[in-house]
Length: 345
Image (cartoon, rainbow, N blue to C red):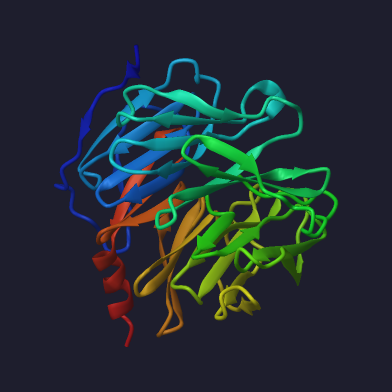
């Protein structure tokens, strides 16, 4: 029997200060990193085998714990449709924590559809191509080789990476906010860290070989690029930091205007660890477990949007939802961010 928490109904009766997050109480203290939406459907996944679901764009929520998954940490997910969802467990394969779970009935029942038990596997990110009805699962490198799986339905197959470049010693990807891998049409890009210098890996289309763009950004243990976001097919941002140092950042924001072929450093940026970046017109929004900020691209201005505890953020309609440690869920409206920039002369 599925363990259920209290069903929450949230009604927006709390007045919102401009540029501030509104907390939403939920009946669990699990920590969450997975957060995605499809239309009005919002799903989140976290520690202790817990997931959350809203079918009405965040007005009401329910949270459940999957039996048999109590020791798992769901750090990414894919929403296939209103009934079908995949949850990705991030953890050591030798501890039985590298697995993909699927529901066919909007979370009432779950089953494992893919797992790796041999040592060395750790899943980082999962993405879905809605046009081609196929997906990609990124794992940490095994013996410095890129480790990626392609899947359709419940069939997961390793991607041939014989021609892919060898990764650097200690280089890996971060299972942080489900955005270390992005897919734009056939253009795949990966960001990570752990090695002496940051690289961005790219496969431009099905007929192209993997390549990497070498940067001069120094990374290392626990630091690098955690998230890549897209405005459109050409304009991308990559953000990161050191997850041990929440209120400082020596990892610059990188921007691309040519679909990831080349990257430039954005100057004069906020100084905090950034775990997620998204485009929410007309802003680039960045968030980490201590702060969040908005960048107005035309005005070339930053505004802090208040202290936050959110590992992950997404846009749903005219609102931004964030989720983080110890059951912290919140939202902020784009209109309240607009006011911050209207105060400028």
